[in-house]
Image 1 (cartoon, helix red, strand yellow):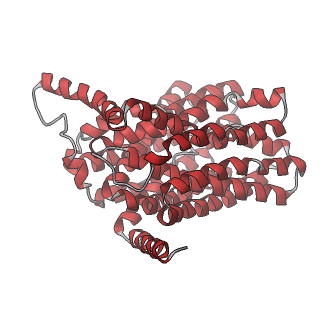
Image 2 (cartoon, helix red, strand yellow):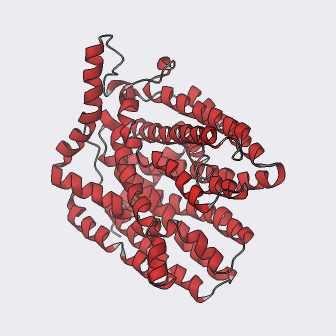
Image 3 (cartoon, one colour):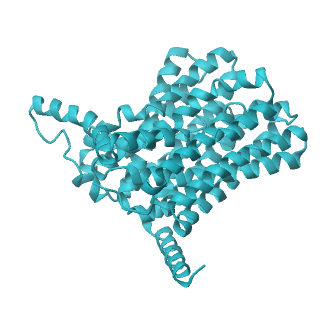
Length: 441
């Protein structure tokens, strides 16, 4: 490494340390906890609850469609970009929606605990849908808040701090809920979630409103005339997407959306079948919980921090390339498990490589998407990008079982690793357009 390159890397490392020591990093730590806490209780853990009280697998699968709120959140993100939450306008555009969504999660978890999964099904599903909407809305605003409180070169450090909180939230929302439910019942476990959500709510009340959130675009509630409100609301839903296309050009904008959608394809292909594969490999539920849901979370956290460091030291383009290759190659570790079924060392090795790669790639991809947004439409455009990032998993995940049934787990793991090839081809096409630059307004 040349003296100039070494000096630049040293400067970036010092900047990373400074960002991690700021109050903004502490706020993102708590907001990450608030976003990670509901994720499993509204998905994987919820399915366990439903199964235990007697729901059949078909019904459980249909209930899982509620999670599409997280995929379709770009549909209502424009309102969160333009309108302050009802009754909380004095808090500002971002903080008002944070408080609104987090309060919704607190009330939602409390009511889910009171009604319980074996109560009236329509009531339970309605509460579940409203709680999931609140969780997805919180994610929209947290992402916008993070992008608006710091320049693009500081995003890697803030994302790493967010990921730490997110992983801790997943531990409480996953293993924590299961342990409490096992000892005190499911209602007590979901009531615990309502109490834990008080921490991010109090943080939102004390945090500062990003200056950019108030100056980027006028709120549609500023003018009392109804016709103008409708006009501004219409622009709120059209202009963010139009701006994205105009800034990048329609060809590049399309390539960017496809690239984001395919980037984590190898990881997302495994999402649906990972649990069944662990069972088929001869591992018990307690072993899966210990290795995958506890140990694996901390390994993923280590990968997330490594991703933040990589962004600071080697830059966005090389980090994107390295993360894509890591996610694809880590899938081949599952071949190790298939060759050594029921052997804990193979399980630990596979989870170590897979979760580290997932954590690394997650931070790198989020930082990349953050740089593609315009300060005027932060929430809407980032919600659009994250929706594309999750869409392939929802679509392809449902076909994973057919692939295994028609071939084998071994063939499936090989296919999942090779699925990174289109992503690498797109990265090559976009290579000159990706680099360390500030967001354009």
